[in-house]
Length: 263
Length: 328
Image (cartoon, rainbow over all chains, first blue to last red; front, side, top):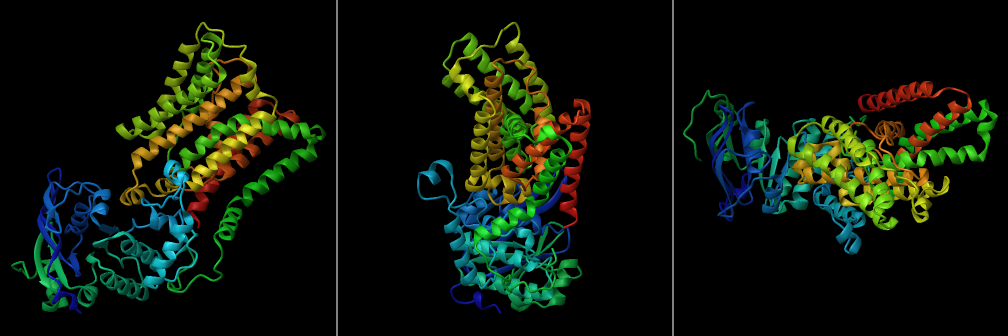
């Protein structure tokens, strides 16, 4: 499964050093380092409260980190808002916060990056070009084999799997380099989970490197190249997926197994 | 949400064009409102012979028009998940201001109208800015605005006779027709804003789920200030139509207009909780309210009882909104 690990890979796209997040006296995240290599799927695992979501929120500017440096393609990059992350080419799918129920699929995909008409109405009044947006979404869905026809309908009309597919498709549409996914299969059934994970794997083919939070060890073993384990806000291990099994991972997550980090 | 069969990959049956989907969608949403309007009109039509005249119908539209212009702004603010209780007082400030501009300073109507719109927009934007900066809830900030702007209007008007305006200005309040034309124009522009523009479309996203919108890179604070600004601008427009119609300005005008506007918006089916709605619905809601008020007067029911009726309808409309949200 770890084909992406060989040959061309090993060039870091995103590096984070010493990321901490304090809430008053509480240390939610304690000097965590992270390296994401070109073309890989990196899993972040850990128990509840381990700091997984805090870490990706700090990486994507959704919360202000207390300390830490982020490098993108080797250059130090300031990421303080979700907008900064998007500009850098990082696209994030947050758990439960991916789509607005009340607006259409088209409007959801383009939310925050709407296409305006290429005339004075667009430039001066921000009049949207729905034709162009619809067409781009149809292309995108074709490319990713997402079968949703009624892109004009409100997002709430769709199943969990369809909604997740739409959210993931945004990373291909806009994520120039990196996709960060917070439990992409959390609310999904078995069949829908598999579809979502196949879609995650296909993100690689579209030039994206992926960071994925998950609780599902099978998904780590089947779909990821490397895995980092967090416990109580600290990084406790980074391993090549080829070198671990499910039991080892669970041991690292719960603390039953201690490990010197770094794979 | 009945789609639990797991056929997530299969396409929905009947791939329809965008406009068919939209019309079907709109009809599904407004049919109860439309049906209520017809039933209510039909009720008074049967009960009261004088109610049956075309003049009555026109006067319903005419009386609705000023409040409906103001309610267009309320629609934008409520869709974005906001609330503005101060627009009735903004209405008073703008009314008194244009009165001063023309009656005292002798400004030409065109200049007075432009300034009036600017004042309305500025006061609305001030509400939005204070909320965004202080994070004090909209209810409190605009409740403060409600009394503060009212005080401002009283100070501006005190000791002044604000009446007898130029004909060119009074034209905007001529009969039922001109206010109605202005109402439909304001509603049309508001509708285009909400459905066609980036800022307007973002109102639905911010009102639907502010956190998702923020994470998607939508500038929440800036957008919100614009929505309150447009709310103030439309309140100012409504005020000027009324001043033109009455041919005098006084700070007591606009009292409770914000509540009637919110009532009409909610009766029409725009959600009080944001994310859903439209200006066409607001017009329907306003017509329902005015039909009830006019109809009850024809039946000899006094103003106090009319207020009780409107109050009950507001609660029923919000209940319906809550029910739709939870019982889907």
